[in-house]
Every structure is written in structure tokens, then in C-alpha cells.
Image (tube, rainbow, N blue to C red; front, side):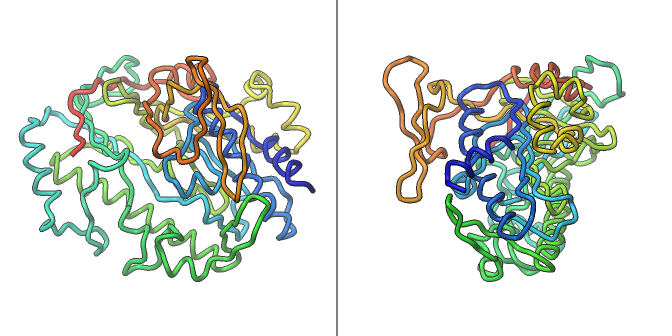
Length: 398
């Protein structure tokens, strides 16, 4: 197959449900390369080249430069097997990021929270989870702690009057550590040494097969458990007693062949957080099974899904957004992707209809977060129902 044919096949395996803004279009344009790489690998291994991406309404870019350069966006899930195939794709870079939602009976005073954070974030702090020292990092990147007043609009549950969200991952375990290798090959020498690699028309892909793949998934599950305990540990030290409402992962491996890229996996009617910008309400939602036959038809997926033999994947998508996603008000659409010396450059049309912009490093682009439009799109598609609304009181970015 020619390079263009690989890309064309990959695009057929992208099922987008986003709001079709410039960030969604960038996600689509870049994901084609990542999926093409996985499909190329599948063929080399004698497998059916059916790697698939199903997006959520918050589909956007990833600000992790390595993941973006590997050909992946954010807001959806990637599948490359039946959940039991001994094949791990390292290029997707799972990190077990998630959100802990806790319920409080009393509103904590912000001065007390600041004082506690000052101690928790001090270099002399010696907090450990699973014997591993953890470092306060909720002032970095998109990690945060928010405090809310509960507005129980649905009246479905008896919620506490106040809640908080702790958004973070197990950053300490991306590098090599006392319990094993790190999850990020470019930060873990041990993982880089055992990683299998092949060259594709779209760049190198790193992966593991057989027992090594199984071991990687087991290592990931340890990191996910660590990450959940880490969020709880910091929350206890900050808020004292609280009720755990939700503590789910939205960036990690749902199974050995499924990567959640910033989305919730729907299971067991669990309550899930959907957090927007700090100045907007967050929501607790119940995810609904997706996609129904009617949803597949309405989204225009039916003909393609049947042709590619992917109807079962679509009927068991079961995903919902975890946030609003990055937004680029100055960009309108992707005009083309220019490849040069192994790098990808995105030629963008601008919202003001004056000139064009060429971008490569998305981390350096000015951005905002989407607002309520993602919630409305989620409800419109029938992916979730709102359990309650959370009104922001404090945003702790320290």
C-alpha cells in the first residue's frame, strides 16, 4: 500500500462525535497518523489492521509533545485488539490520570487550605504512597484542586452540600522507580531497553508483545491503583474526613488493548465528573451505554461501521467526556498537513479570514478551554445524564 492509502484507511477508522471546531479537526488530522502506525504494526504482526479511534464530544489536541508527535490527539478511546491480545502500544503514553470527587459537610476556609498546601508542597514533606514518596504537583499543567457548592438539580442522589475535585496522576511513576520501570519510554531507561520498535511510513512505533506486554499492563494497573490512592492521600491531608463520590481514571488503559485518551469508560452506572473551565460549573453525570443503533445511524457511522466490520465496537463504545477540552479561538480549520523530514506541519485557516497559520508544536499554542457546549453535545448524543451541578467556589492552583 502507498502511504496515502494507509492514511486513508486510518481515517475510515476514526469515528468523531466532537463539536467540529478547530481543536476537533486537529485531533482528527493527527489521529490519522497514530492509527495508521498501529494498523501498519498490526499487519506486520499478521493481525487484522483494525485499530480504531472513537471520540467523545471533547475531542481535541494533547499538550504532551511526545504523544502528539507520535500521532495522537485527546478525547476518546483507541482499540487495537479484543482486550486479551498480548500487544501493548507504548506510543500512547498512559499515565493513570483521573479525578477524585469528594463530598464535604462543611465549606473549608480558604486560608486554612492555603496553609495546608504550603506544608504539603514543601520540599521537606515526606508523604508516601505504597512506600513511594509523592510530590505535590497540583499547581502544574492541567492538574488542579477545586472546591464547589452542590446544586442538586436532578434530585436523584442525596449529595453533601459541598464537594471538591482533585485532578492528578501518578507522575512519580513515569520514570524508573523502586517498584519497576516507568510508563513513559522516553523517561524510563528500563522500558526503552525492552521496547520493540519498527519503522512505519509515519515514523517509529514502540510496542511490546507476549509476556512483556502482559507485564507492562500489570505495571500500569499498579500505577493506576497508586494514582487513585495518591489523590485520596492528598485529599485527606487537605480536607480531613470526606465522602468518596468518584475516583475514576480518564487517561489510561481500560484493558491491554484499549487506551482511554481523556475520556470516561462507562460501567456499573457509576457517577462521573465532567469538569469545565475553573470559572464554570462542573457536573456529575451518569454515563449511558453507547452507541445505540439509532445513535450510530444519526452520527452517520452505520455504513462505514458495517463495511469495516466495526459495528460491535461502535455498539460497545460506552464512553463519555471528562472535560471541555482545549479550544483555539483564533483557528478555524485544518487546510492541510505538510510532512517534511519526518515532521508534521498543520496549515490552519484563521477565524478572522486574514492569512494562514502553520503550527507544529501544539504545546506552545495559546489556548482556552471549551465551555457548556461540550455538556450540551454530550446530552444531545445521549451519552450521559446530569446527576448534579457543581458551582465553583475556590480554584486551588498552587
